[in-house]
Image 1 (cartoon, rainbow, N blue to C red):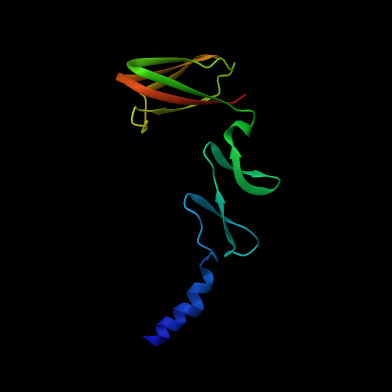
Image 2 (image 1 turned 45 degrees about the horizontal axis):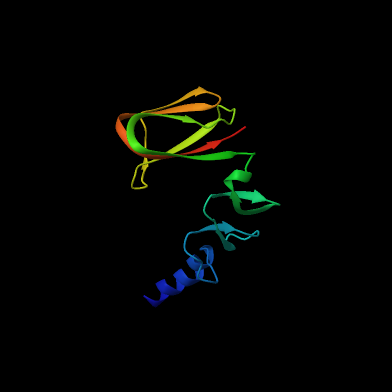
Length: 136
């Protein structure tokens, strides 16, 4: 039994990544340096995505990525069709829809009406909010 443990320690543990500190919760591990065991944890703040800035992987505000524009649309009264005017002159729109409790929901259909308007359709009446990210 002792030999099996010694083999594990000598052969397997050096192959596994390790961290010298206890990383904060809600962080993303990133390999830094040439070795497979050099991990660092990157903290991503609200409204950020993981990206590279100045050659270093870090959190980047979504509003800084490719001149994106954001819009939060509230629909407090339930309806089966939401027509959202974003007025950003683009058809490149990413939409995430949330119910009243804050859970992501999936509409039956999302339609680009024109470069300033989108339409979200549901099988039944739905209240909640939509977050739009528009790309140029």
